[in-house]
Length: 145
Image 1 (cartoon, rainbow, N blue to C red):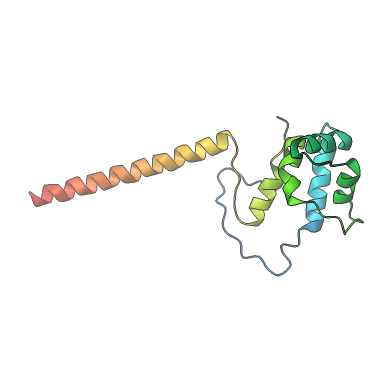
Image 2 (image 1 turned 90 degrees about the vertical axis):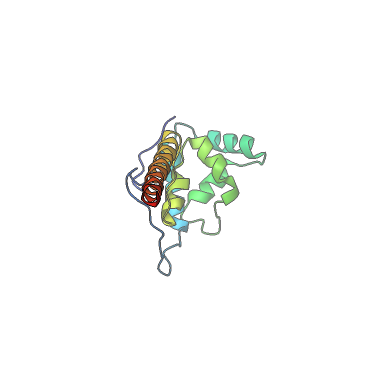
């Protein structure tokens, strides 16, 4: 699967922290338009093909004209519908918008091996904590005898 480099995606070892956004910090219309446009440019598919794939995935007609309107700075009245986000990301083979939104909220998106690595880490921490607690209990039991 092709994936464009995304400078907004956190490094695997960075710890995301909840954000306390300042007034206006979440006015994301223009940055979203730019991100959509960049992803369309990076895609090997034409806008016609992306629209067709999105239409297929959503069961709704989505046109190249709509994609153009959602990405044009001059078409302020047109907003990209959140309900089309999964289909858009599938069509252009990315998780970059989901990761960008997560980052805005102080979260991180893990996909595939990253998600498995995180789950392994969580389970290993739980195992280590349980082992430590067992040792403490055994020590306490030894003192009681």
